[in-house]
Length: 245
Length: 393
Image (cartoon, rainbow over all chains, first blue to last red; front, side):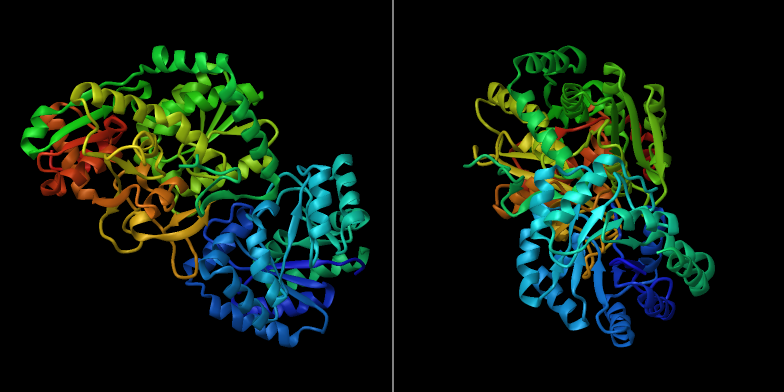
C-alpha cells in the first residue's frame, strides 16, 4: 500500500491469540500498529471501541498480559514496523510518565497517542518520554488555527495525527476545503508524516485520505470486521484496501 | 494569596485542560467570553436581577434550634433548598446561560446525576428560549424519575446513557462526545466545579454567592464567623461556593463531607479525596477513585448527586494545602440525618445535603457547643422514593 499507514487494534481484544495473529497479519500491509490500552472512560472514542474497552476491563484486563502479547508482535513483525500505544492520560499518569515511557522502550513501543492530552498540556509528558526515545504523538484538528498548526507541526515527532472531523472515532469522514488547506499547511511544516485518522473505513475513504495526507489510520472498521468475522473479516477488509491504494 | 486558578487553569498541581485537541479553542473562546462577561455591567445587572427576583436570593440563614439542642451544638443552615428549582444548582445555570447567550450559542447540553442540575439547566433554557439536551445515566433516570419528568415538562430532551455504571460519570462522557461533534453551535453547561479549565473557575464564581451571603448573615446573627462550615462534596460545587468565603480568610474550619456509601471498599463509596489518589478524568487533574493501573473505579452512594469518582480540582488543592478537611459520611448516617432534620425542624433535605449534617450527628462530640454552619444545598422531594425504601416509615 502506498503512504505511511497505521492499523488500530484494541490490545488483547477480543482475546490475546486473535489480537497477536491479527496484528502480525496487519503489519504485512501497514507501517505501524496502534495498540489501544483500554480505559474505562474513553471520551474520544465511539461506541464500537468503547464497548471493546469495557469488555476487556470487565474480563480483568492487566497491562502485564498485554505486554506479553506486544513482545510476541515485536518479535514476529518485519523490521522497520513501528508499534505505538493509544490510551488516555490517566493510564500513563497512574504509573507515572517516566516509568510508563521506560515500559514502552522495553516492550519495543516507540510512541504514545493520548487523545485527552492536547498540545498545551503535553510538555510534561514529552519531557518524561524523551530520555527513553518515546514519541508523544501530536494532534491537529479542523478546529486548530493556522498559527497553532504551524506550532504543533513544527514540534511533531513520530508522526502527526490529523483528526479529519469534529467528532469521535467511528464517525463519517468529511474533508471540507478549509480542512484540506489545514492539512496542506501541516505537511509543509512537519518533518514527520501527516497521517489522517477518524472516519477511514474502506477503500474510498482511504483513497481520499491518501490524496490529502501522507497516510491514514484505520480503527473502528477493523474492530467491526473482527467482531463480525474474526481474522478472515480483517483479511478481506485489508485486501480490499490493497487493491486501490 | 495569589488568585487561583493560574492562567493555565491550575490550582497548584490540580486542574488543567485534559481534553481532545478539538476542544481547546472552544475552551479558549469560553475563557475570553467569560472575562468580557465579568467586566460587563449589564450582564452583572441582569444576573443580579435574576438571582433576586427569579431565583429568590438571598436565601435565608436558619438557626435550627430543636436540632441544635438535641445535638448539643449550635446548627445554622444556609437554605439553598429554598432556591427556585430546589437546589443551589440554579446559581450556576443562571450565570452560564447568560454567558452562553452572550457567546451566541443556540444549543445547550448538560450532564446530570440526581437531576437537580438537569432541572436547573432545563429551567434556564426555557427562560431564555434555548434548545436543551440533558445526558443522564439510565440508572439515575430510574432513581430520579420525578426530576426526569420535570425536565421534560420544561421542554428539555433527556437522553439516557447506557454505558459504564450508567450514572453521572457516564453522562459526562457522553456530553463531552456531543460537545466535540457540535462545538460551533453548542455550550456545554457543566454543573459542577470540575471539568477542564475554565469550568472549575466559572462554576465556583457563580456559586460563591452562597458563601458571601452566608458569611455576612452569620456575622449579623452572631457578630463573628462560625467555628465550622460544612458542605457535602460530590463534584464539589456547593462546597466550593461556601468555602470560598472562608478559605484562607477566616478561622472557620472547613469540612467537606464525601459519600462514604456502604463501606470503604472499592466500588462501595464515592469518597474521591478521602480514599482516592491524584488522577486525570473529564479534563482535570484531581483526586480520583482508580485502581492500581489507572482504571476508574465504579462508585456508589445512596444519593445520586454524589455518585462521582472525581472531584473539582480546587478541593484537591484545599485538601493538600490544609485549608479544608475532607471526611466521609455513610449512606446510613445520611439517611438518619435526613430523618432527624425532617422530624426536628420540618425540613426534608436532599440526600446529598444530608451527608453534611450526617457527619455532624455521627461525630457530635467534636462539635459540642460549637457554632456550626451547614450548607443545605437542596431539598429532598426528589429523594422521597429512596428515603421511603431505605428507612422504616
